[in-house]
Length: 269
Picture 1 (tube, rainbow, N blue to C red):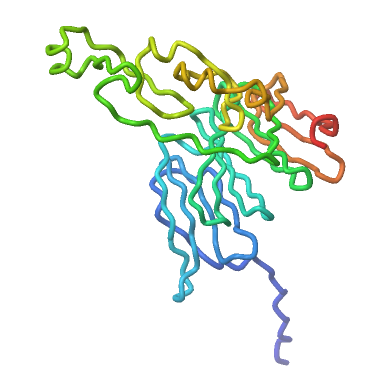
Picture 2 (picture 1 turned 180 degrees about the horizontal axis):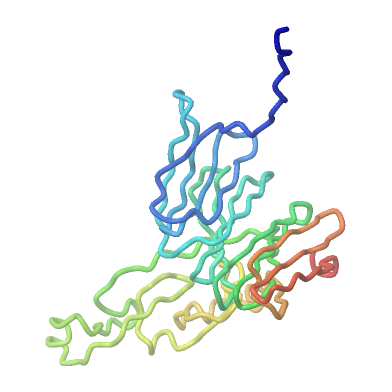
């Protein structure tokens, strides 16, 4: 009698759609671009890559941007089409992806590496958490300004005193060269005497006081110094967050092996 043939059990498994290679170090995070055939990734090799699907069906890094430091966290605003990245240099950067303007807005509000980001779309508030234990809630419903590029100069662009590497001007003027600084508001190269003041510039992302030249310090109004973020101490080194927008709850986990659940409605509203 012939043996009865048993049907093979159905097996279900994930289908690999793409394999994207090219990063030189560990990929810290990647997000799918909503409604687009695209992926954005960040890596320990300090790169931000935007992988777009080509006519061949393969994904290639159509946009490649090298960062001065390692990117540690990503978050996406699907409505404004803005990408937020946190990095080991304590900063958060807002990238205008959807507007295609190429703008990048800095947010400086941490004293340690930024390790987690979450975005409250309904209130347009960004939540950033870091190794300093800080939870920072940023108001993104304001018109922010790009920080200026730092200008190059051989002498102070305010008083014309030579910097210490400008040997010719030092010899001609019989003056000792000065150390170079930069005003965070105008970007000019200035000496310490012409930039003796410090100020917060929240609309430029500087919630903490930074060096500014004396003329910019006089021009900044009290209204312009009004903070655009609130700061809260979680009392643990946060490595991951999850925000439940329906209830306004934030879940944080830290290197201390502790999970904390927060009601963020007093500040995210």
